[in-house]
Image (cartoon, rainbow over all chains, first blue to last red; front, side):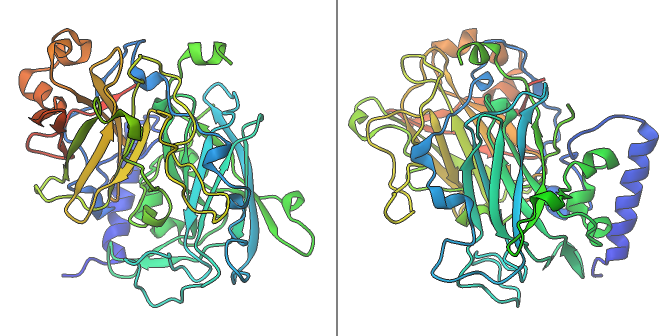
Length: 250
Length: 185
């Protein structure tokens, strides 16, 4: 029998209840989160092995520079001959470590669906139009305050096949590097007040409500540019230890 | 400060994250010493995972861990990728698995340690996984991580030499012969 939203919502509620009863803190999603069906065969059953070696290579990480980005990369509305359709937005914020220190000069990458909810990807064949003036890929380096800034259009929600009538809330994928490989993060930024939040097993895989809220950007009127774009702020805090020697070397 | 939660890379990163020569970490002039690491990513049913993304990070052959910019060097004329500069070893590589769930990287031997660090992303994986590709040799016998593991689990981290300077390393995400994945608290 086809899996319904009701089935998935029930599972989401069960996992949420179990999390509340356990009384734990959990910042990241569990990798074995059955409501997101693709996780079933793609999560380790063994616990992770803890590495406490202060000499671990993972406490350092890759670096990027001006050769790795072009000036146009941060403006997703200017990558084609014409203007993309949709609601033009500016998304900005800071990338910080757990101590609140800015992550400087590191690579931030984004990708997203167009205003109709369609990705410029051959495997996305759902019946929404492609936009010849929008690819949906952006990149920038964070500045000395850890700031990133992208101009883009607001992505649309789109259907997927986790269950019947499954829809993803509008989101922008973010990929971030810290000063250490341990701080690597790929995540998704959501838009405030989206009615699809409760139905989405990917967002709900973050069972802690406070942690889930940290995936939602804030509309900030002062970031809106008159006659031009709406502004959203989203700060990102990278998890994981960083080597102190890197800090000293700067 | 409390961390931003992870979310899956999803199925549609393919036009955004992979870049030209992402797996060609070894600069062109180092053909004599370059090594190739290749393998499959498998799910818990033993099926290949065609939408995984692997990132590699490692010291330079001299042991330096500072890395260098230029992994995804850009063409300022077209806005596309120019490919690596042919000289600089950046220490960083990124490859997506193909339709067969296979990947390959060509790199230089890491200095000071017997391993390459790997970060695994995939559709269905809500939070990335770290592992290591150990290159077989005497240095593995003294490695603190390897020596702390049961032999059966240890073997999942050690690549198999299949030809001179060519190593196979499969990633098994779930179940039988599951790869050891790492946590850095």
